[in-house]
Amino acid sequence: MTTTAVILAGGTGRRLGLEAPKQLATVGGRPILTRAIAAFDAAPQIDDILVVMAPGHLAAAELAAGPYPKVTGVIAGGASRTDSTLSALSALADRPGDARVLFHDAARPFVDARIIAECVATLEHADAVAVAVPSSDTVVVVEDDRVVEMPSRGSLRRFQTPQGFRLATIRTAYERALADPEFAANPPTDDCGVVHRYLPGVPIVVVPGSEQNIKITHPVDLIVAEQITSRENAPGSAD
Image 1 (cartoon, rainbow, N blue to C red):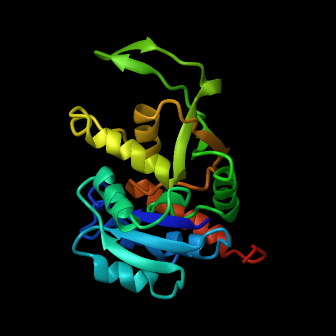
Image 2 (cartoon, one colour):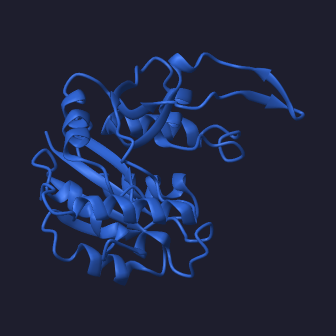
């Protein structure tokens, strides 16, 4: 049974104020995309890697992926997260349904080996897996600028990536989603959301994430990312 890592790099740099896609920005002397690819290339549980890049920037993605032998393809994504996932599923159309796939945001360059290993191991007995960390903030539901609900923080988690699936599961979820006229107007924000909505009987198993597995979205995130790389490169740090 093969395991493919799909690196979703279709985002832009709008919220970071960049002209080029944010995944091409440099952190600690290396592009964010390169760091994400390297993490999965080094993982023994991963057989191959597919990079889904923002249209118009495939050459840059191919350059970033060049040193990593597990990368078997760099393809164009779409205007949305859903479009990029569908591009990946189309590229994996010849894979059997029991193959495993991990979808990972390229903007999370610090995913670690433990998270990857636990996601793949979980897919030995589950059809869907998510990575999450406890919420350190109180999360409230607001309507018309008023708090209407305050869920218990103990049961709340913040999703990260990767998110993993048996291919048959994620294919079926998207087939049902695309048949739903409401999906285009109100799509879930990630792939686990699609499975949760359209395959509610499929349990999504959660494995612990890491506070270091940050998503680089805003300018302050670049500052935090540089601090993380500074600690990595400090004398006495592990390679």
